[in-house]
Length: 570
Image 1 (tube, one colour):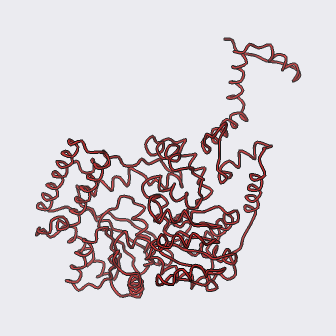
Image 2 (tube, rainbow, N blue to C red):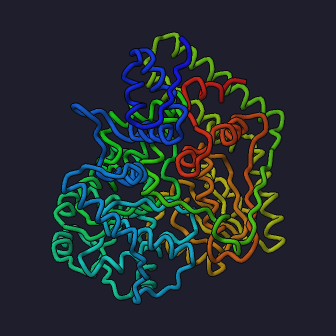
Image 3 (cartoon, rainbow, N blue to C red):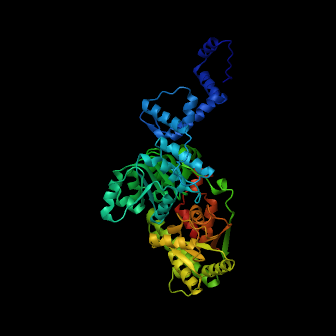
């Protein structure tokens, strides 16, 4: 069809020309207008964004109220928007909050750094219009003091609640006493007195409890109108099926704050669980979230779905890295120490690997279900990882000395000779116990912490190490990778690699944080030509899913059964 040409001296003449066009010519004209006029291209982009952050409902699209921030620029460019009173009131509160420039309460006994002041102001604005927040700063940047500053602002209107891992509760009690002595710290003691303590909470009171107590006292805690609730190390509520996550959903609060350096550790559903507690409804139901975001992003690497999800959550997540905000922090060096297994230990590992493949092949031939197959694969992977640490962790009868243990002891002797102190992490308690035995035999002083260490004893050992008692601190990765300040150490040694490098980084940040004055060196001990090397390859090949959403990095995909099997295959 020939190109449609229009020329008119006035709008009326132009309309008369358009009326004389055929239907086909009018369609061509609409397409040309859509793609040739910048304003219309912008309009189409905005409509696509609106579609991405909303969901189908009845005869139109439904957008959660908290999605107002994600579509703010759309409504501003629209000129005029028809909305009901509730929407207009919400937008008015939003605009009022954005114009606020809050100052830290005068009762805060701390001087906030510039980025901490920005964090406090951001949190204060969100609390002003009753939206939940996730402060996802790097470990060691002072998330606790930023939260306490907001707590001092909120506490005069009602009681506040802090929920943290048992191992971190002592740190909260110490920091509240230090930075906010005007707040009344409350603790839950014996079971018989808990009801009275909870019922008696009032303005300026702060109750600090563990996640264990959260679900034990869920009914009583759900009856209180909290002014502010803090979920520290909020990765603890990443599984929506757990009692702690379900108890968290029941809490009534004017402001909910999640503190975590790793808002996502493995899968996007962890993000849904977190936001379902701090901002219910923002990401829709779990099923809709999976259909709209998790499956397209994790399986299909759908960039459009990723951008839409990022637009929805960005207003409620604040993340700063140490490299961006702490120019004065000493340098951090990472070293991968590859260990060649001696011939006998290599043969031991290889035999285990082949047996694992044979066992999994038999299960596959038997027609096992996908979920059961995955459990068996992970079990075999765990055996191989333990064998890399020390053969005795999988075969108590072996007399093999363990090449990694010998390499570790050589490294430690060199560090101590040069007057360094080190944190030593492993996810396997059995490996830490073997290390402890070897250190005792060499009369090397150390502190020790794993999941069985009682909270008061844990705090005592941390304080002792900081005071100079012990050259090494042996720590279980899962029990002590968060919530500790151990700047007395200037070396960190990871005896085995964890799946997610972000978890390892959290552990390393026990030493590399505010208050550290010396350069920090981080060693990773890896058995060459083993499954450990392949896990490190995953660190490089599959970028942390949190950075996809928070920092705009490339998309990650969740590990399939085939990915896991490839870790075992030669």
